[in-house]
Length: 551
Image 1: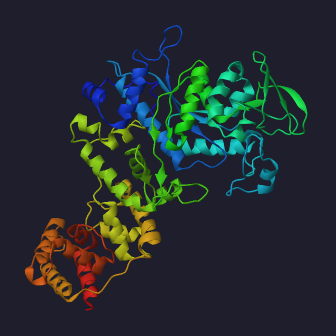
Image 2: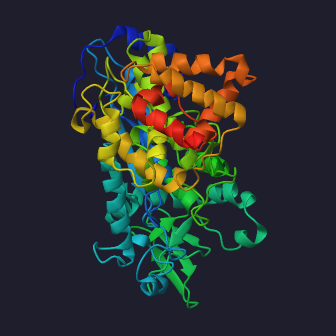
Image 3: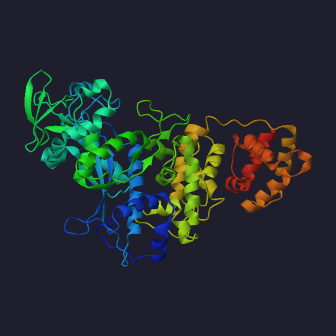
């Protein structure tokens, strides 16, 4: 991604800058929250301009997933919108930072299903993730392994971010002053938290979680503050021994709602979005941040993903769509486009959404260059192209939709190959070469996989009814008199004319198209038939009709 904190921009596009001030696109609406927070820019005690801090959080007890991507993507979009809002006459935006924070001091609560050496992890339950050996044997700790995966994951998509690990900050003493501050406000924090807890939980709750000097386990035990300025507490260890203990230098961590608030204050976080399931946590952490002398960040509370049945996606249930699965059947652009839209509405996330997302992305991208500036700023693609500094331009389009590709490979069957698809694309696309059309080639690869796993196993062509058979025969006769290169529009006109013939008895053209789809393609839905004929080829289409007629 473009590092706008260090590189000057081009001269400001005043039309874009002005339109951004009133754009109702959600990234701009979110960015204006930050602008309202700092009307004159964020400044330090000397009055110098300092970066606005955007943050995303990650729990490294598991592997990075599509929710991680979603949060970093959406936060980046708000960051870029804020930069657009604050560009000066020379095009330079107000400085910003994006911090990707890993809570790797958290104690391991249960052994994940998808890791090796479960016995070793079981023996280390309760210890900070950063102090448990790596079951994969590649890094210094389990957290280090997962943190490395997170960074590789974010780098894969070109995000511009600064990685911060809780363990490094705690162990190096960078959070020591913040921990002392928590101890000084211990009673006030308890007054916020205790009313939100069940009676049984209140008996053991503490904002500070000491790490046992004997077992290395993160303890959920009551504490007594001995000396806040010295960072000293007293508690009873697992073996019943009363211990006076320092919370500094990585010898304790904070309960997560308190930790969240402490992090906001210590890192100067100004913006962080989170899911609807953390609404209450965000409220309590905001109150604690205020007690600690800070301020809750602005942010968006987004809705959660649902599966195909409308049920909440759960990692433990495995009913969601992983990022690897999305990218096997769809492109990164399609995924980002789908995740961009309507973040405050619950979204179904399953393989069925991929083809439409892929086609809608390119529909919006093709419109972009011809739109007036105020409409461009409402176009999802305008925002997505700016996550990595590319602004797009004329000619950003695909000659064939993903939906049409799926219809083609559906007819070709589960054994269709990439080269075979490209040979058919030669009927429809000028200079039909994969190297000349890399974006289309990426969709060809995904369409073959999608067809293999989801379409081919379900396709079933039905026998046409008598009136449908007569219409198909008439269509074949009309096509017989056409040139192979007549073009999609000419083929489409012939299809319309046959369907409108009263003798065939179709109540509407929709019934005619459904008959074509079900008898020729084996599906209840399908493409614009003129485009399909041009792509599949005139002779091949006539052969398909002959097969349906049993000829």
